[in-house]
Length: 446
Ligand code: IFM
Image (cartoon, rainbow, N blue to C red; front, side, top):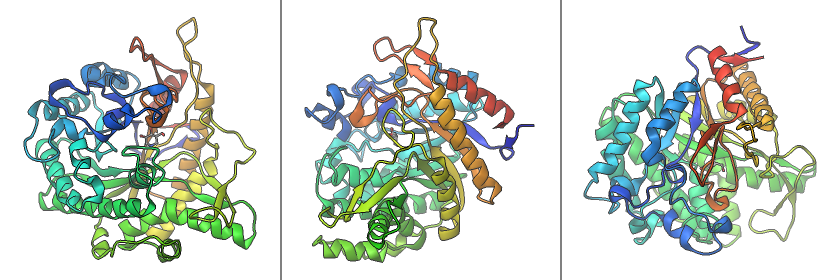
């Protein structure tokens, strides 16, 4: 028996997202998404990379599922490309595009791998962005229509559904920082987007219930908990605002049907015109699970000149990954306990956790990613400790299955447990993939 044994039927696997892996952007009727457009604008993506080919998963999914099976995976989290299924955003369904997901799901099920489907992982059809995208309140009915197409086709076979992946990134990284598609830099607009995303999420959950789709419906949030840099009241305030932004904003909406008052006050003080949030209470629909994406925390120091959160992000003198993200697994343990205590969360899945290293294949054809094994060991144990302390966690999906198109970092940030050669498209399992195969086999580690 392993020293850190996970609960019976714990799900183990990896996570990916459509635009990051599928490639085939013009194949079988798929139309442009906001990411296709964003990648065309010089300066947006490191060294001008795009997801045009990525892992060519659209054409090689059978090979990929076979490799997951060989590596012992029991779950796989993926997302659907909206513009592959509904090339006009709404209206006529593209049967070929939809069939791809149906075939993928069948392939997974026959390999004994549980599909976890995310409806939206950032790739809005460009045609909808041209109508205002998530800033347009019609997005709620667009998303409902899109959800229905997938519920109709895959309901029953897919048992685990997530409405959105990381609404924080959709709203704020895409519409406030401008680092992701659609590349807007407007705090007010991003707050409106965050509100509309929540309404769309709740509408999709309601539809799932009305259609009596068997299985579980949830949402996936990313968390960057903040610590005050020192014990000073100013640093605590700076940290509280960042926590309000990166933890409480969406948790309060989803579980309490409101946005945090201190954040609303801050935004008003900063002169932001806010929506009336008239329907925010309706967001608190019961969900079956919360998907938790966690990579690293942040430390904040007060700075009266820093807009809008009075905070500077301070790098700590601790180990970091090659992406320069702090390695701090205690935060994951604390976060899981906190989410349970403060929000009485339903069961949770770790829907993403992992690390980026500049891995290379040796002359012997191996990838010796011991740093990743170290990172994952520390985080697996942290999750185990949270389970021991009573948090209901049912599965762990490592980001990511293979190195893929890492958004603004293109191909230059490798998160996979399988190495991907972007020129030959060759997949090479790294040491971490074999190590994880043993963890899965033993349902735990020492
Ligand atoms: O690649 C992303 C993923 O799409 C969303 N969560 C974080 C990952 C690593 O940056």
